[in-house]
Each structure stands twice: as structure tokens, then as C-alpha cells.
Image (cartoon, rainbow, N blue to C red; front, side):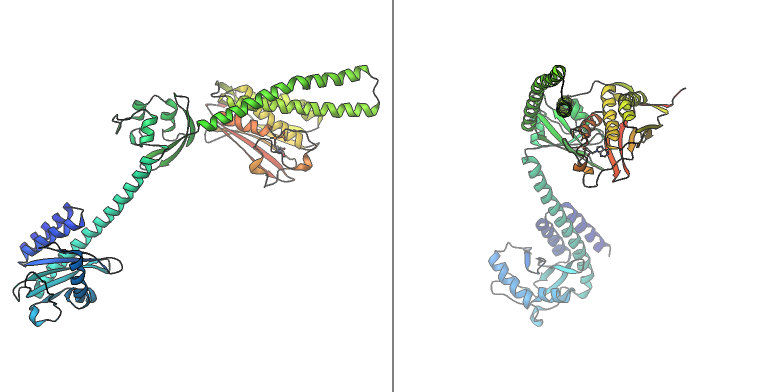
Amino acid sequence: MQQQLNLLNRISDELNKDLDPDRMLRRVLDLMVSHLNASTGSVMLFDPQNRVAAFILQREDISDDRANRIVGTVLTEGFAGWVLKHGEGGVIEDTHQDNRWIVYDDQPYDVRSAIATPLRRRQRVIGVLTLVHDEPHKFTQNDLPLLNAIAGQAAIALENARLFKETEQERIKLSAIINSTQDAVLVTSPNGTVLLLNPAAQELLRLKGRAWEGSQLSDLTNNARLVKLMLPEAPTTGEIPLPDHRTMWASITEISGLGRVAVLRDISPYKMLDQMKRDFVTAFTHDLRTPLATAKGYIELVRMDGPVTERQEEDLVGITRAANMMKSLIEDLLELSRLEQLEELTREKVELDKAVETSINTVKPLADSKKVDLIVDDVDKKFIVEGNSVLLSRAMGNLLDNAIKYTPKGGKIHIKVEAQNGHAMVSVADNGPGILARDLPRVFEKFYRARPELDDIPGTGLGLAIVKIITEQHGGQVWVESEPDVGSVFTMSLPIFEDQGDKPD
Ligand code: ADP
């Protein structure tokens, strides 16, 4: 008994030593042959279609041709076929007395007794393990439990080897893809240790040939933008300028238990095109300013030269409206292009309630003239955000301006500032015409004007695009909730820098 346990232990050790199925099975065969005093042995493995996938003989290497011939007969008429069919082990005490043993022509050794057992994965027989002896009556039914136990272990080890091979193949495939991609791939752990840099990423960080494994990213590069983006909780996308004037676009995925995986793509050609487009718009709009001012001057001259008839005055008002509209368009375009080119905001502490107050004061005359009520609901807290007060007032002013513009006479506009999850929520709610669901996702796009029936309300379609870019430059977000014929609520959320509690009187 002790001897059998020792053998099982040794076989288990052997099986765990090697993950190559072929070598593993050969070692098991050797050990079993010697411990069960057999002359030799073999293992046959089947694929999922029950075709023979491998045939290993302990004593000799066998040609495919001969293996196929032997296997074909033993599986249809022979002992291995019997084991496969019955799904259990068996003993042949004397091959001369048992027709399950088939003697083939060129058998190099005599076989007089045999023992065999199935190898199982779950319920399926995946192979047959056979030991033989050149003398009869060398094996008994009592040997079967030990052989079954060994076969059980071998089957588990084979399954492990198969899984390992599959995982390894997947790993090799993935690593080939990662290594050959033009995009730089970078993986860091939550504490900033570099776990993976593909060749493109090594080139990008100028690390070719340098050891980087296990280093801190901040020790490998002084690109602060990249190091910051790889920190846990940082945004998952962003532009990364390189010292050679290229710009990369980083797209990052946070994988729990691993860290951050960044894919960096060179977007320099797109940036260049974008810059050319912006330069063109800026130059073009700039050049329109002078002729427009001249045209407006002539309108005044016509009036001064007067008298003009009532009809002519109506025409002049129309021309003036169109010229003013064009002026707003030029100004909005120039503003947008200036904001888009702004690399980094110059930041100062901004008292949000003051910025709200400034924007309300700016639009108050318009609200009064339209008899629209501006109601300040809740701006009793003093939130400090970091950014540019002029731009923030401009963004809020645009939201208020729209609310007044689109809300009919006698309407009410509520302005609120409150805190939520470390963000100041500035909301402007009106009881105007609202926005249709189909237009909601698009109103922040450049030049998008919803509801053609409201077209006689002057506008450029750029106001909300300006609000969006200003909010994002302040690390915030802006969105709208609206119901047609009930009203709209525009909300800007801005990260609070300091919350100074209730405003002192
Ligand atoms: P515009 O110069 O046309 O006002 P904006 O970018 O400011 O351009 O707004 C885009 C569109 O969103 C507007 O044309 C309008 O259809 C819709 N919109 C904006 N604010 C409101 C509002 N408060 N109520 C209803 N519709 C609005």
C-alpha cells in the first residue's frame, strides 16, 4: 500500500514537472512500466471526434504509417477499442486465450498479458493507457485501481497542459499583435510602475534598448501630460504633445487588478489640417470685419442724407439687422476659434456667485425689454472654482441669453447654483418652447439651430458650442434637459476648488 502511494506521489510530481504532454506521458509510462513490472506500455490519445491524435509507445518511436495501421485495428477489434467502448479498464491474463488481443505482423516483441485503463476528461474517454508483459498472468484485476488512479492524475495533468498551451498560444498571438501595431501601447500599475511598453511605445519614449521593466513611468519620461494621464482616476482620453512637435491621442482603459492601458495614436496630420482650417476661418472672418463696418457706416450716411421714406426706413432697418447678424457671426466665429486654439487656461480663483451676477447684469436689459423675469433661486453659497472669470461669465451669459431669446414675453427664468459631488451645478431653467428630443443631442454642435419655426429669432448656432468649449476647458460638463412646450434646463457642472460654506452676510 505504502509503495503504491509512493508511486502515485512520484507520478504526480513527474506530471507537474513538465507541461509538454508528450514528454509528460513518456515519463509516466516509464514509471508505470518499472513499478508494475511490465515489459513495456503505450498511450493512445483521441481528439474530440474520437480520432487518434497521438500514439506513444514506451520502447520505440513509431512511424505515422505503422501507427495508423496498428491503431486502426486495435481500436476496431482490439483491447484499446474494448476499453474505449466500455469506458472501463480491463485485464488480459493470457493473450493466447483472449481474442481482444490482436497480433500484428511486425510486432517487435511478444505480448502474453496486458492491462489497460481509460483516461477521462469529465465524462469523455480521451485516451487509453496500456501496459503489456511478455509472460502470461502478470497482471490481475487487483492492479486496476492503481492504474485507474494514475490514469486519473494523468488526465488532469493533460487537461492542465492543454489549457496552458491554449493560454500560451493566445498570449503569443496577443503579444504578436501588440508588438507589431503602429500604435504605442503602454500599461502601468496603479502606483505608476510600467508593466508593458510595446516597441512603438519604446520608440515614442526614446527607450530603445533601455531596460524599463518595473521602472516608474515618471523616471522614464519627463512628459508630464503622459504621466498625469496614467494616474488612477485621471481622464480616459487626452492629447499628448511630444517634444518633436507631434501630437498623440491617448485612449485609456482602466482594468481593475491591473492598472491603466493606454493606446497612443499619432494625430499630428489631423491637428495640422485642423489648424489650417482654423487659420483660414480666422483670417477670413477677420477680413470681413472692415467691409461690414463700412456697409454699416453707409447705412448711417443714407439716413443722414435723408429724408428717407417710411418704406426706405424699413429697408434700412432690415439691412442693419442683417449686418448686425453678420457681425455676431463673425464675433462668435473668432471667439470660438480663439477658444479652440487656447492650449491652457490661465487660471485664477473665481467666485462663482460673482460670475453669475456679472452675467445676469449683462442680460438684464434684454430680459426687461422682453418682460421676462430673471429669478435667482439659490446662489447663497460661495463656491470657488479655478479658471477664467470672463470666460465663465460669457458661458453663463450665453445660456441666459438663449433662455431670454427663446422664452416668450412674460416667461420666467430660474437661475440656481448648488453643490453635488464636489461640483458646482449652475442651472438656467426657462418655461420657453423647449427642444425636441431629436435635437437634444445636437444643440451643442457648431451652427446647429433647432426648430426652423423659431428661425426668425436671430442666432448664429454657435452660442452653445462656445458654452461647451468654455465648460470643458474648466474641467466641467454641460447638458440640457428639455420638454417641448414646457421648457428647458441647461446645467453647467464645474469642479469646486474650494467650498466656503454659507456666504457671510
Ligand atoms: P443660437 O445662436 O441659434 O441661439 P445656440 O448654439 O445658442 O445658437 O443654440 C442652438 C440651438 O439650440 C438654438 O438655435 C435653439 O434651437 C436651441 N436652444 C438653445 N437654447 C434654447 C432654449 N433656452 N430654449 C429652446 N431652444 C433653445
